[in-house]
Every structure is written in C-alpha cells, then in structure tokens.
Image (cartoon, rainbow, N blue to C red; front, side, top):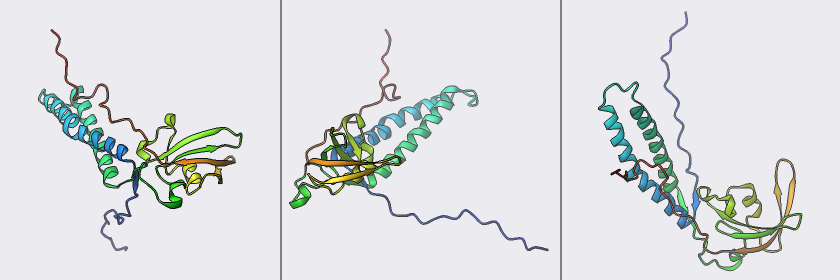
Length: 199
C-alpha cells in the first residue's frame, strides 16, 4: 500500500532582476500622465458606474454592471503595468551632452542616419519600448535594427541579421538631440469625460 503524501502548493520562483526600462524624459512623463489619469479620473468614474449598476438589482443580466466590472479589470491591469514600467524607468535624456567618442557613437537616444544596401538613406531615433512610433522612425532600443546600430560611429558598416537574410548598413551620421514625443491624450469615450447635458 502506497503512502499518501500531502499535496504540495504551487512552487514560487524567486523574483528575478527587473529589466531596466530605458526611456526619454518625455516618454516617462507620458506614462506618468496616463497613470494619473487612470487613477484619479477613469477608475473612480467606472467605480461609480459599477456601484450604480449594482444597486439596480439582478447583476447576472445587468449589462452596465458586467461591462463596468470588465472595464475595471482592464483599468487595474493597465495601472499595474504602468506602475511596473515607471518603477523600472531609467531616464536618459537624448539631448544631454556626451563626452569624447560617446558623442558620435550609437547609444540609447541617438538619432541615426544610415544607408541600406540599395543606397537609400534612413533616419531612426532609438527610444524606449513604450515610445516606439514607426511612422516617425522611433525604434525600440531592443529591436534588431537598434542592436545592429549600437556602438557604431559614422563611416562604420554594420550587419542587420534577419531570419531570411543579412543586410549591410553604413552609418552616415549620429546625432543626440531632443526627440519630440506626443503627450498623453485622454482617449475618446473615456468614462471620465464630462457628459454634456441636452437642453
């Protein structure tokens, strides 16, 4: 007869090191503005709707209540995410003065002009994960292109390795200047938007 062993609880792994969140000052401000908006305006407005809907009786068929609870979960999840990103932030100002060779080598915050194999010029700015905007040429410091460009200087040739092929790039210019960021904007249809009363 086999001996019964007590069930073990889930094994909890030790928390590993927090990955640094390199970000520009404007990018961090945008995260903080969204965090503040969710905590001080959006969440309280949704809590108010949920409380009102709960007071209407049967919650199982109450769409306002069910939607409000789901929305509250999404807001809380986003608040937790933003809190972690802000806590892990390592602010690096692209416009800060750099000494010696660091002023002409590619690091976080650099705006790089490079030529591809076809001779076409491209300009990219290396920014934080939360600041990526491909339409403006803002690429993540963790992207394959940024990894290929890192530590290169004007005149250097680097290889961009992709699954299908390797592309050869030539660095033309490395500049450190402010990288404009759009500020946080309250989303359309937000719960906290003041309701316009009809007359």
